Image 1 (cartoon, rainbow, N blue to C red):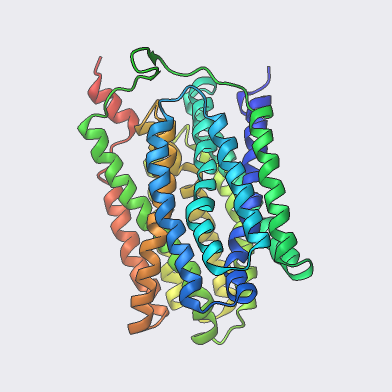
Image 2: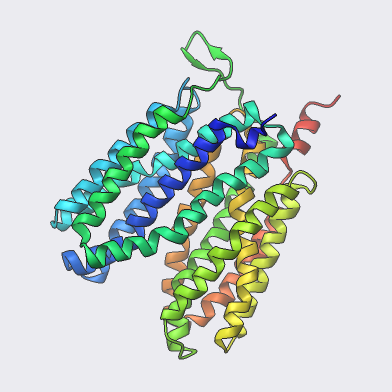
Length: 402
């Protein structure tokens, strides 16, 4: 009998996540270069659309995630948001007016990015109905690994297309890919049986979350935001730290990042495999300890080989966090796949916003090396916060004792 992890529906989910990851990896890494070089705006105007995308993504994910949990079928949402991505990329391909591009990015492209959250919600629905509970973290890790695979190949492809064919063709190709994903989401993904329908409202009935669950969710959201924030601060600061403080050519940053990407996928899959044997929160705390060792090492490192060696801790940190984070939220919010995926996705946006401000202040006053010192403090806070999170299984047993 075929494992539920490798049935046609699961394979279709993996393929679509890889495709969406490739489209995002074609557009996002090159967008700042597009604004600065192709349109020719100053650095402040380059940063504004990114901040706007983060803010609108948080709002879109929250409200659409809550609303989508009451729908019978998520697939039309996925397709509609991908069509919006198609339209946004066409604007990027043909318009060179900053105002038009910026408004499209903030209002339309950020809405297109919700397709990822809805696909994640669909995968969680599939997992809850078709995969044994002890294998769900492994399934989620395999799903998340597709994004990692896509980001290994996507950014180099995006820069090559922009360099040799120009942004016109680069974003036109991304637009076509978005349209293909929209069509594939309807063709490859079947309608899943949903939860009990509330006939009075015409939607799905959901019980309110218990106060203890809300408390654990709030702590999780805060801690995940801190961890994603320190990761973003690391990515912003390390290239400049290499150049200014260690006199290392910044081209090595690409190799350092590539090393992490190559290592993190195996750790994602291992984390998913061991999640059936080890409590999820214990594995998440291990990710925090790996982050602590990473930033301690980067703070004191003086040679390039040391940075390469430290990427093993970075791979454990990102591999476990990205692979299991959504499983922690899902376990606390069963039956609310849209809200769970939106909450988890928003922790990355909140972390990115917070860390961008933090890097600006810390680096301006004390230098980029001290960003890693602040990262150490924030990771300690996150590990401490996770100690107050009760897992979904613990809460379920306390709320419904035998």
